[in-house]
Image (cartoon, rainbow, N blue to C red):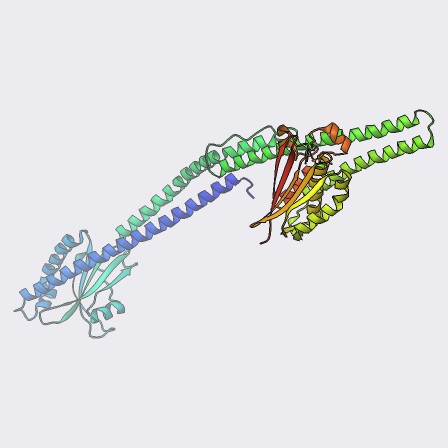
Length: 488
Ligand code: ATP
Ligand code: MG
């Protein structure tokens, strides 16, 4: 098994080039073979036609001689054959051509006599095959290859020729195929030598090319090995090319950025959590130590225990909120979404919190209350309303006003909570959704706030694909506006 992608690609590359070269070699070899054989046939055919004409002319010259053919056989055949030899050399452009002129047998298997033949044939006879005989019978020429007549293969044409009295004969012309075979053998040899050389060169080029193409990846691997949770400051070298490797480097760098940010947030968060838990714990310990310092009355002990319960409650709230945040961070909520009537949840929370509003002597009014249905989780949405309304109550002094509204604008449900409270300084606005952030920690300590309320709201809004906006003027009040995609 090859484990390196670079090697795999190199082998694929070499494999495909080899197949292409083989295919190319086969195409060239067989095309050339067809062309050379075709040319040989053309040569035989054209030469045959010339000889056929020359035979007819010869017969005409001897028109007055009733036994011209026998004359040829008896004495003048040398002349005719010499003529043929000369013309053959001129027409066939080869030194050796084998020609034979036969009487046309009356039937296929009946023997025929040879009227004339070139001296190049020596004591050999050009055979007359049944196919050639049938072709000549139907006045067409016939090509065949004779592999064993000589020590080399020959290609032969058999064609019918006619004398002045329309007696028919068969003219057979054969040419050696040796030069065709030699050419093909040489070509085969050239291929056998050049293919491995080409492959070696191509493999070398492929190897160098792949090495170069994969060098950014090797560098990435080396850098990535050194990136640990302790040191996320390293980044992959930016790759100049805008190809997939460049894109991969950019994506990985962006991922490391996000990881570094998350790690920083986690470190900061765990620091903040320990700090946040330290205060109520120290307070708990301090209360107990004070209570134990000297003998107390039962009323004093009761007060100390009440303080302990209060501090424990605060700890409990922080831990509950942190656990809740971890839960909404890790769970995929959208799968459990149902259709929620947002106005009903809003009114329900309002009723629950109305006691607090009265206690603090605040005026609360509804501006608009449209019926809105959204896909969501009722429990999460309820928690969001509680956190936003309790902030409005908490940070608005007595006598202040809180205005609630829920509007439907097309596909959006827009919820607004406006208070006439203390407001949020501009510098604090970008941080109010951070976990454990409080504008004024000392004041929030009085109210028992831990700075997790808006972080929870922000996460719930994000889980419902919503948006949250805040607008605040210190000393005048704050507006929180949340919008969710809703059903028509
Ligand atoms: P808790 O976790 O109990 O909600 P908290 O109210 O301090 O504590 P958040 O609700 O996250 O925390 O709010 C963060 C900070 O934003 C608060 O400390 C407060 O200073 C400021 N804040 C939030 N809502 C308002 C508001 N309506 N008016 C003025 N300040 C606000
Ligand atoms: Mg709050």
